[in-house]
Amino acid sequence: MAPDVAPALVVPDATDPDLLGRVTLVIPTFRRPDRARRALRFWAGRGVRVLMLDGSDRPLDLPAEAAADPGLTYLHRPEPLAQRFAFAVGAVQTEFVSLCGDDDFLLPGALAASARFLDHSPDYVACGGQALGFDRGPLGGLRAFQRYPQFRGLDLHGPRPRDRAVQHFASYSPATVYALCRAEAWRAAMRIWSDKEFPVYAIGEVQFEFLMAAMGGIRRLPVLHWLRSHERVAKAHDRAKGGDASLSRALQVPEVWADPAHAALRAEITARTAAHVAAATGLSQAEAAADFEAAMAAYLAPRPKPGRLQRRLERLRLPLGLRLLQMRGQGITWAPADLAAVRMALAQR
Image (cartoon, rainbow, N blue to C red; front, side, top):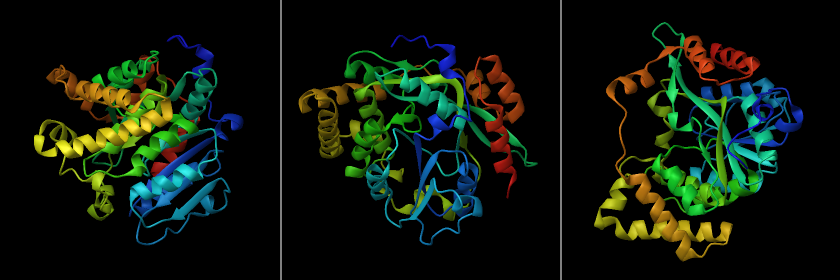
C-alpha cells in the first residue's frame, strides 16, 4: 500500500461493534489490584474482548461491571510473565489482538481505526496511533506529556524484511508491542517472547519488534491511541517485582552486544530469534540471523540527540486539555467519547 492513507480510514469511531468485536486485548497484571479493576471497569461493555492474566499471589475481586460482561475474561495465573504470554498465544481467537498495560488506556476509537486500516492494507501486520504519557499533578489534576515522537508519520512498508527492520531499529520505539496486530503475526511474535525468557532487560520486546517488522508493514496513524501511565505506584505493586528475568534492569541490551563476556548469550538470543523469524517468514535461519544483527547494529548505533530545549518541551507536563489542544493543532484526532470515558475511569478511586 502507498504511504498516503484515505482520510476515511483513520476516523476514530468508538461505536463500531463490527470492528471492535474482532479485537482482543491481552492485559497482564501483577500485584496492582486497583489498576486491574480500573482497566476492567473501563473495558466493560465496549465490545472489545479482554483477556486479563493475573500473576499475583491472590485473585482479584472483580468489579460488578466486568463480571457482567461475557467478553471480559479474568484468569488468576500466578506464574511468570512468559508463561502467561504462552497461554495467551493459544487463547486469543479474534482476528486482531493487542497487548495493553494494566495501568494504560488504549482508546477504542483508535483500535477501530487501526482495524479498518489493516482491513484495507493486506501487506501490513500492525497499526496504531499516537501516544501521550499522563500522571497527576500536585493537586490531583491530570497532566500529559509527549511520548514516542518516533510514532509521528511512522510507515514501514518496504518490500524486504531487513530494510523494514533496520529502518525501525534505527529510530527504535515500541511501535508494535502495544499496537493492533493481526492475530497470526502476533502469535508468531509472542512465541519468541514466551519461548525462552533471557535475563536481559526488555529483550523480549526487542525480539517482538524485530519479528513484526520482518513479517510485514507497520503504521502509526494520526489518531490518539495510547495513554501511557506514569502514575506513582507502591513498590509492592511494581511490575518488575515479579521475579521475571527480562524485567530486571541489571543487564541491558547494549552491554550484551558490546561485552565479549556475554558472547554466548548474544549468540543464543540471535539463534533463537532467527529460528522464529525463519519459521514465520520463509527466510533461511542464516538470512534471519544476519538481518537481526543488522537491525541490532542500527539499534545500537549513535544517533543525534534532541537539543535541551526540545527535550524539556517533550517532557513538559501540561494539563491534559492543553496537551490535547496541541495535538489537535498537529492534525491528530480522537473520539471525544473515548477521552470522556478515560477521565471518568481516572476520577474513580
